Image 1 (cartoon, rainbow, N blue to C red):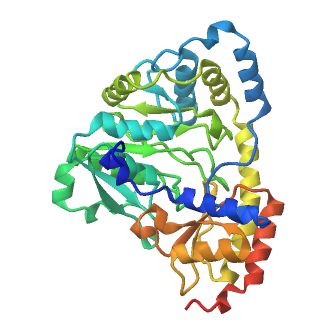
Image 2: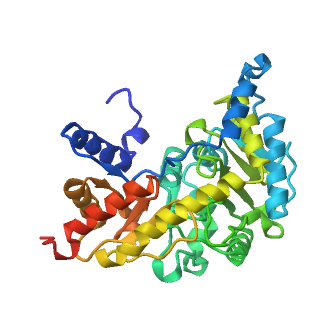
Image 3: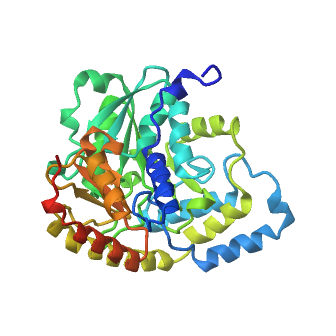
Length: 393
């Protein structure tokens, strides 16, 4: 592999890719596969956003390069959204940066702020991109253990002084992928205090901030007094507005970090297509009624699944947000063996918890990203397996 760098060679394969390969093989053999693995919404973007994209694309001026930091309309919309929803004031010019999806921004942030061998605290279980980004940037990813007993809330007193002294960045993610865990503002207050005490940058991934259920409203880390000194927050329109393929997101907060990331990105990309940014601005400026309608759909799907998991030996907490259910695997299975068993025997894809870190072992992530009819079909298939009676040896 002469032409491939060692750091890329050492990257683990994205586990989702392996399951997608198996899916294609099964489909070629006539198997009707129900994919509850990758968290890509099956719902469509609201029509008013599509209409805005179409209208903006007819303007010849919008086909030129975007300003490197994003167009004014989008950045102002982000600032307006934060003021209206969280009561947080942002300067669109210095405290908001447009991203080509939050995944890109998260990966590039690590390159913009760490030096080789710097420690980055990574939620475990957590979104795999955090760890991969640290590896590619030459840093050292150290697990920030999260567990069911503590409702997947970080226990900062369990981080050693030696790690805290050397840590440069700490990632958090609520509502959380994969665990669907949610927090209240005091958790962020503790996180900001920890960041301040140890001079660590707190990077909060809020990709699922608007997908919440049953009166729960996710807080922003920037609601904490003084948070801008130590924190940035990533947002995305992918899940809330079903715009995954549009690749549009943002980062807000500490202006020094925003500028560093903007400098890095200006040497790599030229921001997102302007009509997409302007359509996203319309989305953020809306009354969010479309988001509420989506959430109603996810609640129905979640209840359909949640109500049968216990009978299958798959205990789970009822989520307050995200598009996922985080369920324990039945006794006798590992995460991976159970995921493979469901795919091979029922044609149902779920994601093994081990894909999200050591602490994800013993769980699977189930995405609520198919219609309720397909979800009911998946449930029926699982019930027919009689999982509790399976010989795991």
